[in-house]
Image (cartoon, rainbow, N blue to C red; front, side, top):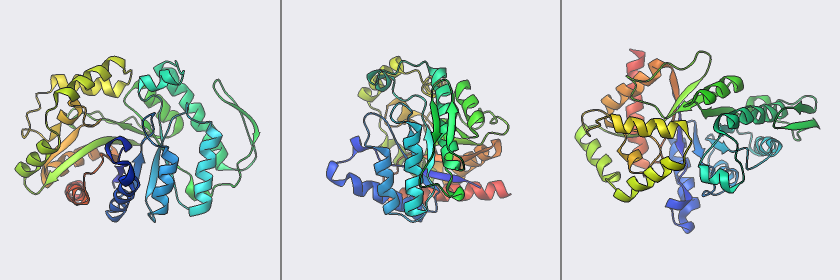
Length: 333
């Protein structure tokens, strides 16, 4: 019913000597909880996502890395080779989070001036080359606007059951078009479910969200406020990021934060962590039953994949699973 992904810790938030173990711990907690996979970030500030995914594969048995893939960083053949190599060594499936943009300053530093919507056009071609290589058969010849290959073969071939699942941002019209063209799951930073639209027909849909749930709503809000206090410096950083970002989701969430009263405790949907630049997604906060009700509403709209925020500790995953259990029961009834 639900396809749940954790998120890998960021290197800038963890001591160098303990970072690898922190990643291993979060991956093992996620696998123990029965979750599908774990998102591995990719931007100019992070460690290489493929090397981090290798660490995850070495230290888990079933968890699928959801690797953020930015076309500016590597040729599509290199991506296909990574996936085929992991498949050959570990017989494990990889998921791909296809990234069109990211931080605008990162793209500028890499001399990539491509406009927002054109980056999605490029991403569609990029993904098509990767898929054709992984699907095997005859050597691949492809001539597009952004990529051209001739007689390119992938060795070793990838077993068909290990073909990667593909995610892409669906917050903009360009992203939704790309998701449809790719046959990918369109992921968005959602509005409250009462305000959220039904996903486009024929496109898998997911949300990126954080959860703080407890048996008692007051306790959940106490934990949430302690974890994400008001931070003036964070608010200023958020405002600066808005000036240089061309991401549709960033603009949409910022607009929503300005127009939503959002008094903590009145409604589970909470944007304070985003407004204070502590995280990049909205949160659901409340009792297991109340958060589960909101998750069930997203599911009723058609959102079945959930990419969650970085967990602070192992116990948090159990609390989150309790909310999802209530959501499953509500959907079943």
